[in-house]
Image 1 (cartoon, helix red, strand yellow):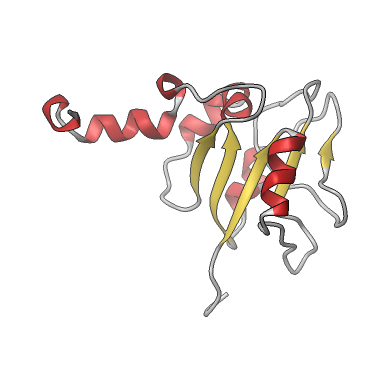
Image 2 (cartoon, rainbow, N blue to C red):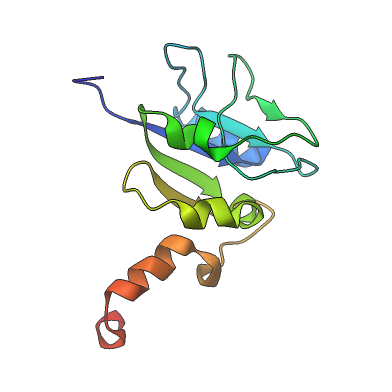
Length: 137
């Protein structure tokens, strides 16, 4: 991994992930695992955010499946940042809140159907805790 940069992984609805793929974010690692994951509305998220397998179209998580955090994007050495739609982050909030390492950084983004809500953003809440209220004005 020396000499190479880290990947940006993206998790979210089909439109969000497709937009990032069209922007050139899509990569496969040496084990042919993609750095993107489409999560459908009826997907049951049993406690994590992972990484799918295979190539071609964006991998979809089938309904009633669970994908543990420890074996997904958080565990990959080649991922430096995880972009996750805020609606999906809400569904797996305990896993997002429990992540305390600097890398990979987990950033919540808006999606087409769910606008960004700063009150729910865990990164913004942590950043506010670093500064005095006077410094935020």
